[in-house]
Image (cartoon, rainbow, N blue to C red; front, side, top):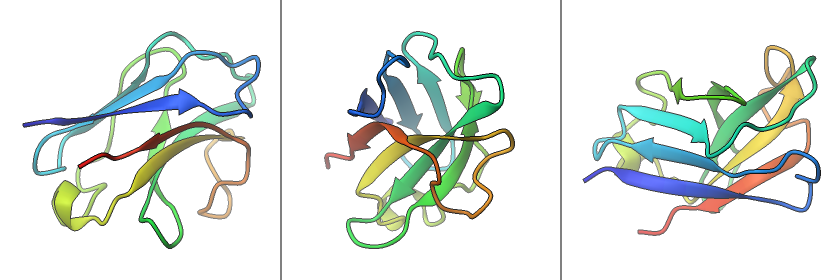
Length: 116
């Protein structure tokens, strides 16, 4: 069955509002993310979705729209959902085009733990 992760606002989400839902096919190869309601970000900023193991650095799943559905790139989770080692997901606010470092640089505004 598909897996859904609800990412709730963090203390850094003041003025942004809402929450984000990410859903994955059972094999982890098809994924979409969407805000439950439009999220307010500055025009020179974008939202970036991350996944991370319990220990270790986060990896980007890609940029997501603040106002609609984003289909994430195929293969974003190598080995599928179970083989990825995913523990939690987060959304950060990044400069246009995404994180310049490959790691979150802006505030993490949404967070959700994957519950097996």
